[in-house]
Length: 302
Ligand SMILES: [Zn+2]
Image 1 (tube, rainbow, N blue to C red):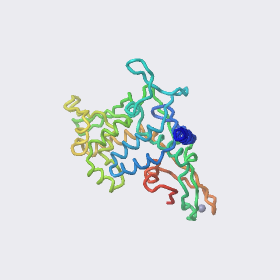
Image 2: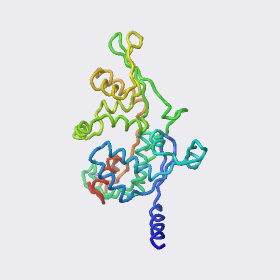
Image 3: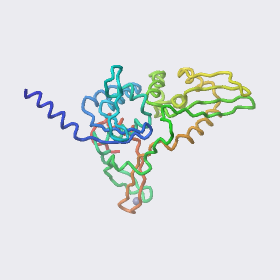
Image 4: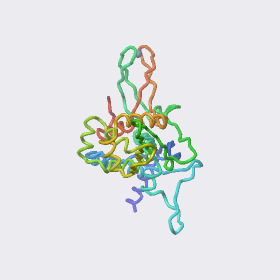
């Protein structure tokens, strides 16, 4: 039938513009295909609530991705009756980290649009405004990604950070790089009103919510003896918000940064000024860029 052929041809063409990317924390490779009109519509609708947006985004990323191991073999799992099947949406959420998600967004952005569009950027030296067409490819620099470098996979690794308080007390935090699943679980405990309030100060998560994503368990010790412990997300959130001294959370944040900062991706390009030839370093937040692109569509000029 002609209609069937037409669909087949259309489907074959849409897969041509594939993009490949390494997910550095999960240490798997992903090949993605471009987003389609239906995905854009689903994401636009979901934007009414950041929590839904995040879920919808991950669903779209999953739909357009295939995952491969280091030898280029597609990662599959065995069912109870010994069949090999594609990793499910749920598998992916517990196998990749929030950092890997940013690289998947890059890959989908790259296969969907290829460029950020034209930007007018002021030279930091001579203040001349130049126009540049920035491609997604050029945002990948030698130091953009840092591969997970431990023996155990990131989703089985837990670090311990201890912060003492006064002469008697000690707070022990079991922490990690969160999986996408953990991130979504924490989002699920925050009311839409609270997220709206956060967004007014330009972030999806407040500081304490951000910490709750990174922390698995909080243990409180007195003179070396454990007196309380919780791994319950809701409890951890409440305690972080209202019961832990700022001095302790500040110390935790500093130590957490020391452990994991190197894995935070750096997407940037060097833009040479027409006038004075100075090279300007231009950083890009891929997730925010993608969010705006979905919202406004087309070539976006800053
Ligand atoms: Zn200049």
